[in-house]
Length: 103
Image (cartoon, rainbow, N blue to C red; front, side, top):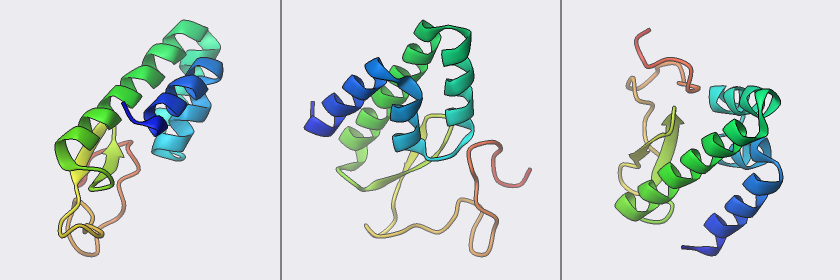
């Protein structure tokens, strides 16, 4: 485990939405985690730990920094090692994790 993953786990233990916000930005996953944390502290933890697990799995599969978050715990590799075109192709609207492209 890398140091950043350990730090994310510590932050998730203290306040799960902060760890989710760091990983996903302002997305539906953050809203889901905030609601789960309000409904019960343990569900918020489970969701945050699941997202941390998915991130570390993507890091192992694609390499450090060679992936991007597309929503719902899904990561995809970057093409060419820099930035990738949006999932819907050139000129498509960005996907903020709420729906897939084409919806």
